Image 1 (cartoon, rainbow, N blue to C red):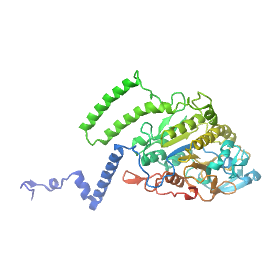
Image 2: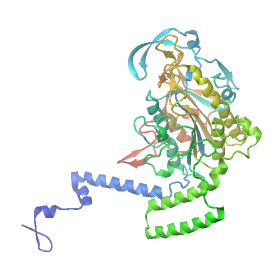
Image 3: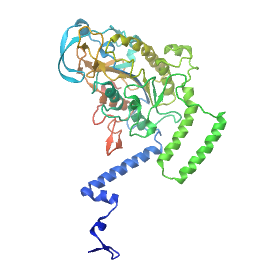
Image 4: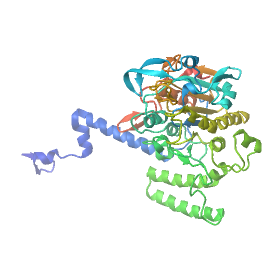
Amino acid sequence: MLKNRKGEVESPLTRRAISRRGMLQRSAGGFGALALSSMLAEEGQANSTTADPLAPRKPPLVAKAKRVIFLFMTGGVSHVDSFDPKPKLFSDHGKTITVDNFQGKLGEFSMYLKRPDWGFQRGGKSGIEVSDLFPHMRDIVDDLCVIRSMSTDHTNHYESTLGMHCGSWTFARPSIGSWVSYGLGTENRNLPSFMVIAPYAPYAGNQTWGSDFLPGAHQGTHILPGTNPIPDIRPLVANSRLQELELEILQRSNRRHLDEHAGDQALEARIRSFETAFGMQQEAPEAMDLSGETAETLKMYGLEPGQTTGFGWQCLVARRLAERGVRFIELIDVGSSNNWDAHGDMATHGPLAKNVDLPIAGLMKDLKLRGMLDDTLVVWTTEFGRTPYNAAEGHTGREHHHQVFSSWIAGAGVNSGMVYGSSDELGVGVAENKVHVHDFHATLLYLLGLDHEQLTFRHAGRDYRLTDVHGRVVKEITT
């Protein structure tokens, strides 16, 4: 028989009864203790980030850029019709080739080469060739670093849209904008640190700007172009003074409640979110009011006075948000329908390009005139490219192509007026200096002063990062 310290008889089962924490500490030779410490570490990290998740933070590396304007063209822009000239495609139009990867399927496939629908011309002092699809971007090509060796992991829109935004092609993960917000905080507490201006949801929907396991304060705030871009943002009270009095009373009540629940970090974060919402009421409508912009500025973006839609409106609002300290601004041109997915006819690229070409060039010129390009990183990309060939002879469209495509970056810390990497002579695969999406992300973070290997968040027992366990900084394109 076994007795406890009081001399009372205990059964073996009673004596073995221990707490859950004790069980974890003793089980599996100490393995349980590791699991417990991991869970406690996650809880501690969550508490530390919810206390003030948007507090400005100094980056660990030297930052070239303070903010990002991320231009995403939905549907897969054809690289061989835009930024990657292929003379051999013109001369070999209609000839057959054999490829070993078609739409993500491996094997041997006989294909008919298709010439580009637009000619290419050199632009600027750098002489970088850009197609007639983007004549205005060709005018500012000396400010760009064109990457012709991009590569991604999937041939479907949904997965590759996730990949370009989240660094994961299989699961929803925090968006790059959320990671930047998490790593740097905000410069303006009256506006969200991450804002997305999009007329329609892209493939993967709002997962493209979601924060996933990061604190919710880092999720992108969706702005819908139109007369009411942020619903319910205007106060309902009669005047601002009355609202201030109401909010003072509410704040005192909230603080008393917080004093009674000391250490409740989630409650503190919730109170801060109310304060940010009040700040947005004051600053967001003004940021999106273009009535004070000059006629010359509106013309630069291709806008008419009073216009509240179109990619030009998105670009000009992006500049105004950047001026006001928003850390990451994403502009999405179209949604999951009527986009750059030109399976049937490449002619559909024409109006889509016209929608964005002048506004993007205008944005670049405007940022440069105001001295903002010196500390703003501008990114232009799509989820993948399009095939230089077709399965059917004479077909006018192009299919998805993930093996190689083109993107460009410009602004703070970027070597301008240069081309990096190349595809082969037909635009089928990378020829040199491959830039995988993970490398792309690592480089963007580096320009913001963030180390992609150190910017992590512990979730479900492991440290996650935007680049997973991959990625290299492409320092050849940085100053």
